Length: 133
Image (tube, rainbow, N blue to C red; front, side, top):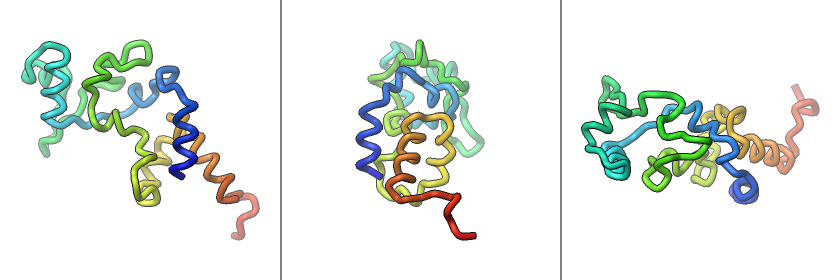
């Protein structure tokens, strides 16, 4: 899977798509918010007021979908983007099988996920029409 992902990722230009930024809820830590706020030249308090929603459990998330910082399919705070954004679609992380549900949720929106899964099916000789019932 990691081998397939490295080949596919190299061929996909995320700025042609931006679907992740257009459709996913982004979790943000307080530290990331402070770093991004500094990058755009505002205080963390103003950043939170303008861009963050806090859950009843105290978790911070971006308050709009698509992301405020998506401009022409590019991240306008790319150097200060959040860890979740940096890691998406998370295919290079260990324990792929443990994250299969989340991966398949992104199958229809992310060209990287789609192509990795399709190539993985070929490599594993997975063909549902031949599977025993």
